Length: 86
Image 1 (cartoon, rainbow, N blue to C red):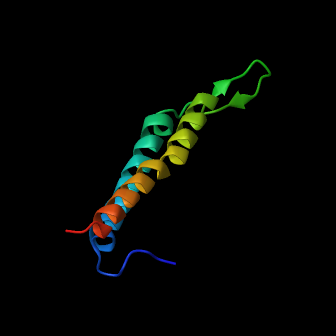
Image 2: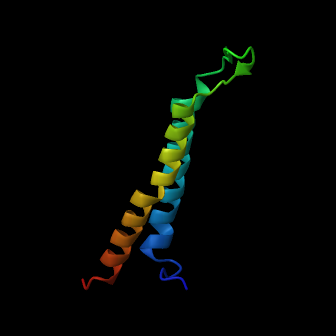
């Protein structure tokens, strides 16, 4: 069940902002952790490995898992402000 009424502040202002912020943070995580590393390395077993190290993948996954937390808090805040008497 949707709490936000069509045309409400949540629908008109916050949702597009959350979508834009998600796109920006996701792109930033990719560029910051993965896009710059394009070279493969030769391992001790004679095989090519890479181009990403484990810490880079863990960093991107961490950012993507943490992304909903501020969005949920902002949504909760906006909804509480809408229900507060003026």
